Image 1 (cartoon, rainbow, N blue to C red):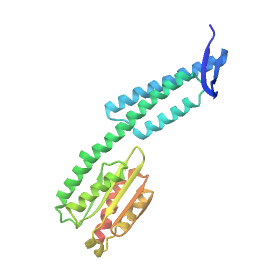
Image 2 (image 1 turned 120 degrees about the vertical axis):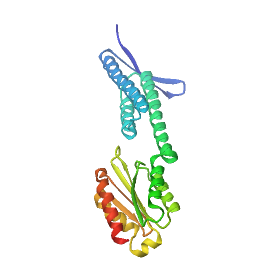
Image 3 (image 1 turned 180 degrees about the vertical axis):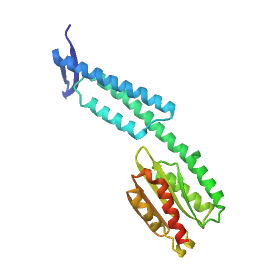
Image 4 (image 1 turned 60 degrees about the vertical axis):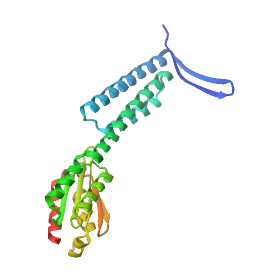
Length: 237
């Protein structure tokens, strides 16, 4: 029995199509390569669904894996119809990952731990505390962390606030600070406050007296960063 693999079909002019196919040993190699790729596609499909059900999906890592496999499939000389079938399966897997990411962000924004942390920190501060340094679970989503910062400003307008958030998967720690005019007059400035921990974070910072931000890859430094930021504020206020 001889092996025949159709690898491409395309139009070269009106009414004329070009078909490229493999036979013999080259066809066998193409079939072997295709079987290997199909196994990888089925594996990632299964893992994505399992991880979503378990709640342990690593979004960035999985998205990169899907992208690499898609590129490998596109560049392989294999059966055209099987290639398209694998691409379709990977698109479906990628959609599951994207949907999981959206759901995670929505959960953070609507009922995530960042809001509960914000609320309890304000209660603890009693609205009279001169500053607050806290860590919220918002990953590397600066938009959500900024929303928490605005909650502080609304509930305790005279309290200087510096918030951290860690994204272990992407090796990133971010911090945002806002300082009311009363605290600035006493010597605490948001840009200097963030700068006090920027070297420890291993990244960069910027901003003005009233608000500033910083980020870096040193996710293991959070406890020390909180300590330094707190002492810096204490010395100024």
